[in-house]
Length: 186
Ligand SMILES: [Zn+2]
Ligand SMILES: [Zn+2]
Image 1 (cartoon, rainbow, N blue to C red):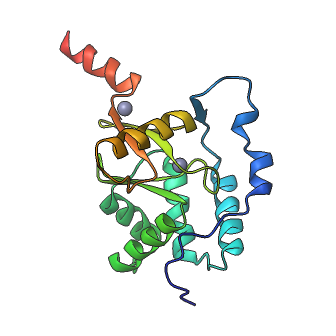
Image 2 (image 1 turned 45 degrees about the horizontal axis):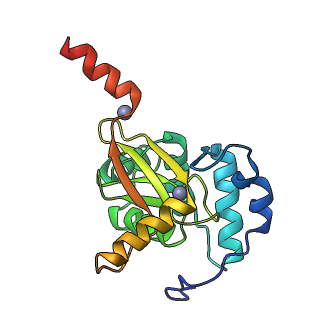
């Protein structure tokens, strides 16, 4: 059942709010969003699809499961490889459509900085994430910092632009890759 693009739906996330309420933590912002387990991530996706009247088909589940299992970003062709390992007949368009669906439902992030995809750590939570992406190994950290997101959006408007993304991507090197690079250099 295709119900068309409907991105403006307010998400009733009371259940997850209580389970994943990062604002209740004592540490001030920016708050790090911890990565859910594969089981939790899938359960959450299932529930959000149910709430939105969307079908969490086997291929959609499989794509999300792989992204959750990887725990970092994955390029589309790598993802296709991994899926074909388990389902040799999986066709690229099917996988791409599944990615589009998961993206539209806010279950995954499209990382333009490194042209890859990653499972959202906080699906159904507040949007406007700040994503720190290691350009070397693709590991992703998600921050939820409403103040920073607001300020960035304001700066974009001040500069005469209209924000068209709900996330901000920051390219960086994770400490492990940084240490490795320094190790090679000396
Ligand atoms: Zn996210
Ligand atoms: Zn790294």
